Length: 230
Image 1 (cartoon, rainbow, N blue to C red):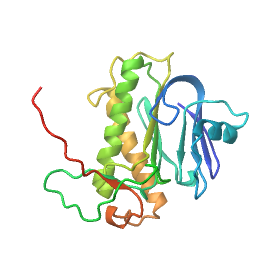
Image 2: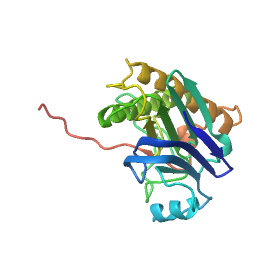
Image 3: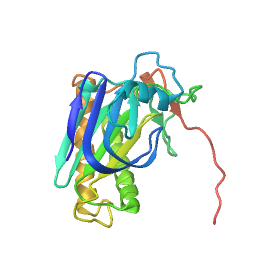
Image 4: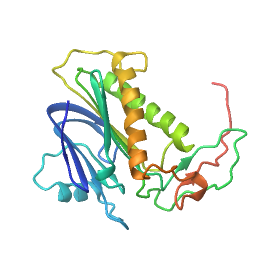
């Protein structure tokens, strides 16, 4: 579906007229010919992320953009049916969510700014035409697949700065839904799983990923909500 341009610190996905949905810093619906994954330098502390991304992209086509501390040499992708996905994975800032009965060893307090450059970034595209609701469904399906994969591989649901971008071809055959029981959703789950695992393997050179207890940054959710019956 996409053409790719990759350097050490930038991955660009291109396809003219793509309809995108992002939950990154410039999130929302976009129509653009490109999306970008940018690697930020160590010690990155910019907060004007839109300006920073524009500076980095220069005269390249604008589009949804994600940031990560992970080099783009660790980007990996997978294709299946009408879907393809690409991911970069770093786990230096895990976001742990204990469930009743879980041990809380190695718990982290929230970091001051809530963001550290580890990050799991996922891009998913489909040749099918999805309306806004189905595109949101595809994003949810991709997040679910990312979470399930990380729980199995690294015992965490994600990091404090994960983001997902999904895209569809408005000229393709229409699909009304993109949940796990659909062709698009099922293919997306498989692609996200394999792309995340391959990037994880590349990032950590085939070794076991770091444990949440060993991470320098991150957070463990310790709030105790009060329950209610609606």
